[in-house]
Length: 103
Image: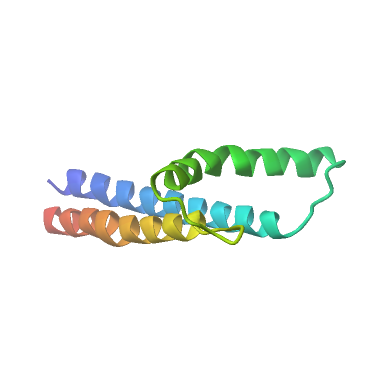
């Protein structure tokens, strides 16, 4: 059973890493909305396109479900942060707990 426990522990750690990485990408998206990056640089355009392509599906669903826009300020990244924190506390910690019991 310890092999399955190690598998769950590895899955929990990878999931935690992906969630933290996604949270940092959402932070980058929020910062990009405040500043005006150079639109003529192809590297900057590629990075911006990647960030928007990764975050827009999640943020668009949040905006559709809960229209949080106060005076032009989009609060959907805050809802995404809360969702990621919930997933890290609930799902990742649950997987770690199950994995530790199986080891």
